[in-house]
Length: 203
Image 1 (tube, rainbow, N blue to C red):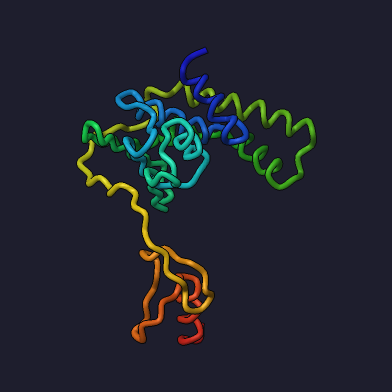
Image 2: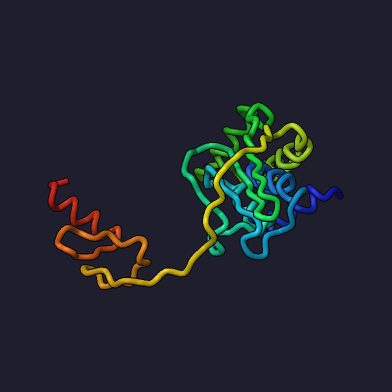
């Protein structure tokens, strides 16, 4: 069993199943960890541009997590992952070559039938077998899966602990950096401030 296969199985336990999307994150993690060790604190930072299955592999395998503040999510809908190594000062940008993972029409139809609950037990079994096969196909293409570029990018600040402020409306505690202050000096959490705007503008 190769290191990539071991990483896929390990990530699958965390994610809940093995799938092609997870395998993409496994390969991205493997590339990132060639010149870095798993991040115990914030030694490695991952900037991810989607919230798909592969991000679970990145969190689990690289140690870049939301809780530690070294996983940055940018909702761009792109299969792009940038890893910043604080020890070396280097940053690698990985952009997926989608032609390497195109699914067949049958795979898509099978996926949809399983997702919407119309698949038979036999089709569900076939789907899981096929999905794991496709995940391993992704691993086999690891060398050509991503366009890898070293980029010049500003490193994000390390995570900080902020004070909490009480929202004037819902009375819940809010991180100070997320408070919205009105011209009248009232302080709202984001949901309450948006609700206030909707009432004012009749939306």
